[in-house]
Length: 452
Ligand code: PFF
Image 1 (tube, rainbow, N blue to C red):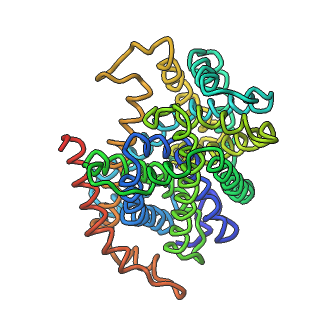
Image 2 (tube, protein in one colour):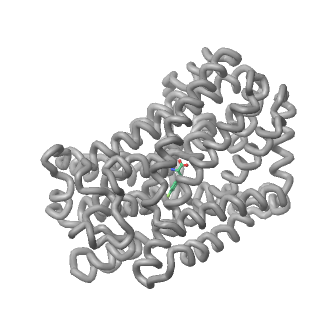
Image 3 (cartoon, protein in one colour):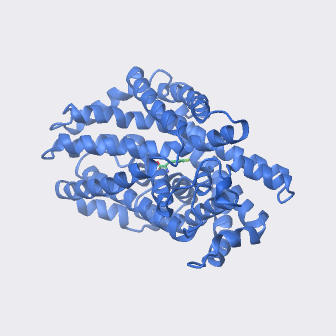
C-alpha cells in the first residue's frame, strides 16, 4: 500500500518511530508499577521471569502489532474490518481490536489518576515540601493526598485535559521531539538518584532482593504478574503499538526498532528499582506496600539531597511528561478510528473519549477515599480496573492479536513487511511468536486464572 494512503501522516524519519514507541512504553509502568509489583512478588525470581517475558513474549508480540500496523497502514478496527471484507479473516476477529481499544481506554481511567498523583507531587516538590521529610511525614503526605478527592480530581482533570489536547493534534507532530529530550533526561536523573539512594540506603539488601533467584517465589501467579506487567509496560495487547506501526516508515527494520524499545523500557524500570529499594531496605517502608511504594520513598530521597528541591521538581516533571507520552496512545486507537471512519475532527473525538475516561477516573479516585467501602468481588474500583486490565484483558488481547497475526493473516503479507535488504528476522520472529509466545501466554494466563 503506498505510504501516501495513510490519512494521518508517516513519521518523518525512521528513528521517530523508536522515540515515539519508547515514549509510549516508558511511563508510570516503569517508575510506579514495576517497583511495587516486584516488591509484591518476591524480587529476584520475578525480575528474571519478567525479563524472559519481555524477550520471549513482549518483543514478539510488539513486533506482531507493529508489523500488522505497518502492513495495512490503518487503524486496527478498520484493518480487521477490511481483512474480513476481503475474506482473509473471519468476521468474528473484528471483536479483537474492539477489545484492545476498550482495554487501552480502561487503563487510561486509572492511569490519569496516578499521573495526577505525580502532578500533585510536582507541586509539592517545587514548593519545597520534601525538605528533610521523615518516613512518617512521607507516609502522612501520601495519605493526605489519597484522603482528598478534590485535590485528586483537580490533577486528574488537568492531566486528562493535556491528554485530550495532545491526542487532538496529529500524533506524528511534536511527540518525538519531546521524547528525544525526555528519555535521556529521565535516564540520567534516575542514574543520579540511584547512585545517591545506594549511598544513603541499604544497597546490599536491595541488590540481594532484586537480583537473587529464589525457587520458592516461582509460582504461576508470579508468571501471570510478570506477563501482565511486561505487556502493560511495553503498551502491547491493546492496539496502541499497532497504531504507531501504521505511521512507521518502511525504511526501518521492525526487529531492530522493537528491540531498542524493549531495552530502553527495561533499563528505565531497573533504574527505578535501584532508586527505590536501597531506601526501602534502609527504612521501615514495607516492600509489599503496593501502589504507594514509589510515592512514599521518593520524597525521603529528595528530602535529604543537596539541591533536592530542584532535583525533585525536574524528576516529577519528567515523570508527568513520560506519563503523558504513554497516555496518548491509549486514546489513539478510538480517536484514529472515529476520525478515519466517520471524519469526526480529531479534537472532537479526543474530547468525547477523554471525557468518558475522565468520568470513570472520578470513580477510581473516589475509591481511595469516599468510596473505599464500595467493593466488587472484594476489590475497590481501582484494584478492579488494574487487575482486570493487567491480568485479564491485556493477556487476552495479546493472545488474540498474536493468534491473528501468526495463524490467521497470510504469512506472505507479513513476510513482505519483515524482510528487507538490511534485515531478515522474519523466521525467528514468526517461529517464536507461534510456538513460544502464544503457548506461553495461554498456559500462564489460564493457570494464573484458575489459581494453580
Ligand atoms: N506502557 C505504559 C507505562 O509503562 O506506563 C502504560 C501504557 C501505555 C499502557 C499505553 C497501555 C498503553 F496503551
